[in-house]
Length: 444
Image (cartoon, rainbow, N blue to C red; front, side):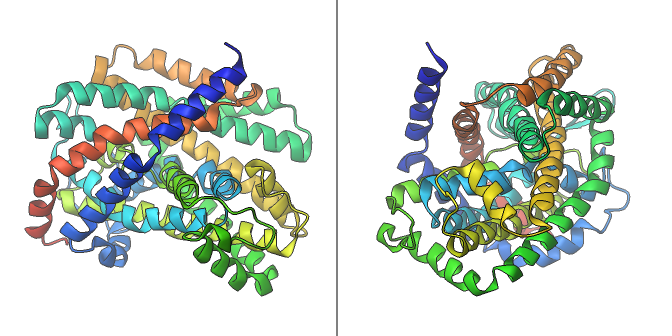
């Protein structure tokens, strides 16, 4: 089987998985939890305040903000930049709205995941806190086999969404923009990642607590600057995004209309790739937070989706669509090229901003997902194979940087969807527990 045949097979599998049943399951869970929890999105600013207020005297491995920063490190990656561009290229500008809606409604799901992760977490013999969907499935529902399936998928998915996708994006950008050989980029990435990963969750959290807010702020300010430059086209871009989300013919302006199904499919898939609400990865680190209340940590964790999708992905989408309208010569059919061309149209800051965004976002995602993969392996086999897994993970960073990964995005979509299924099942089955914990908590 050739690489083209494999890519076609994976693309078809991903397309089938991300049909209407999966879209309805994901959005249905978001909407169901939003209604049952009486719209937790309204508590987002209270949650932001809690994220920077320590829960004194609580047990855990890292601070609440450290857990949030690690979660953001894993979620804010190429999905926020290249992923949004790919959604626009394949699904049209309307995909940006579907991506954004996935984030708004996904706040309720991210809240629910974290609540269950803290409620059902366990303390190991060495004092480490472990939790996540696998423990909710096993301890909350008694479904050990589904918990094992989730961990197997997580351990494998970490090499795609959290590793090779990210290192490949960094190396290609550095090569195409500055002529840096991919081997050199891969070697530097591998070295720096290994130095941080070897210190475990506390080392990752310390790095992310310092670095993630800075990188996100720089990227947001850069996007705002670009939108000011494209000022006369921003409102047109906003209107086009809204119209074409529900009407393929409304794309216009040089865009080729796509079906509503394709627009929704790519917008929702890239939204999940970006914010991971419903996928079950972020709760793994939420369980390590120093907190006495599942609800308190759930509120803190929900802010990750707000920052990741409601803010950063929305800004990226507006930058891309407004740039396409402003500069008709941009080829919007290629997601990776679209991002590069759109940002390079902005003098002075465009190319450096894109480079900084992709390099920092992608590197932080590599670190965050290393923790997710390790916890999945630890659930499956204890600590026996953790060092081997770390070596394989670090080695994959270099491989991703130097090898052309034509099947990576389709494989990432497939694995994301497969991971989400057991997690969404646990959320729906334990919805009553989530609601009961929320209603009796003073933190909410």
